[in-house]
Image (cartoon, rainbow, N blue to C red; front, side, top):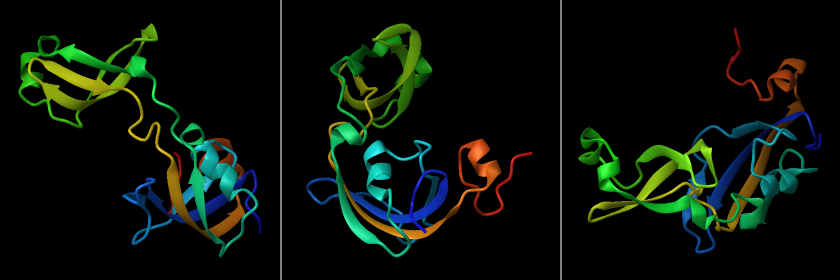
Length: 165
């Protein structure tokens, strides 16, 4: 059975950057299940899996544009430490997340991730950590089956006895 829209698909993957640094993997654990054609994977990966079948093992390079996109410099900023509540200031660490107004639309909020603490400023980014990164995947198709009507209606695969109540 080939991977196409509305198929429940299980894949094992290894994700590396262009320098060969391992970013993520499903190896040693359960495969990643997703519903093909429903936007659950980055565009380039889903497109690369289209038409493959169980047992296929292949490498796929996904450009930043087809992965997590290109970084928007408007989503990088420095915030004064004084903008944070005193209780939060002493616990701020690189990697911590906080919400702030979206500089592109002040009616919305975005999640920023702290990337550096310099003096009285918190440098943070609301760009995805893998923006601007070409993604290098080693993929193995483990299972392909027809999705159930319930899975299609819910927009995701039900595995390990997952059910909505």
